[in-house]
Amino acid sequence: MCGVFASHAGTSNTGTTAANNTGTSNTTNSAPSPTQHFKPGDTVKIGGIWQVVASNVRTDPGGQYDALKSGDTYLAIDASFTNISNSEQQLFGSADWTLKDASGQTYNSSIDSNITATEPQGKIEAGGPGKGTLVYEIPSATKQFTLAFETNAFESGQTIWDISVC
Image 1: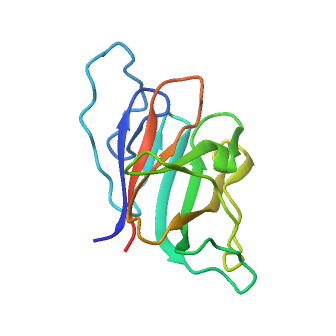
Image 2: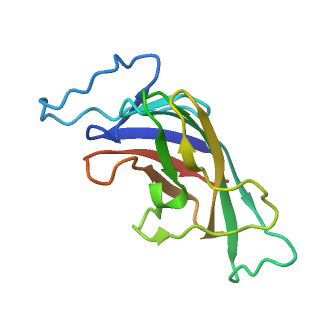
């Protein structure tokens, strides 16, 4: 089965299921958290700032004017956000995300002319929504990736989605 699953480690950038989160952060517990996986479409609460839903993971061959490298395809992932904090927050598009394959190779964001949605970016008011699509050029033969979201580069933790491409 292909899809998106999330696991977590750390504090403010840590994802938990929205239904089970108490809204507090336990920064005194130094024991590693057990890995928790989420199903595609689950709402993940991150650091008391965001609720994120990653969905609609798909590949795309690109449009007639796209210049993919031989053997590559596009990977597109939709992400929707709700600012659950009491203040305006900022999304920085692909700068908030890191896509890696199983060997640790990192992939840069890309543009696919078949996908009209933009990256999730911009200022989001308290309680407000945001959404966008992340696009990466990947080797067609590579099927396993991790996608990490880090809302604050100066604090520990990250939320990681395990991506399986069919």
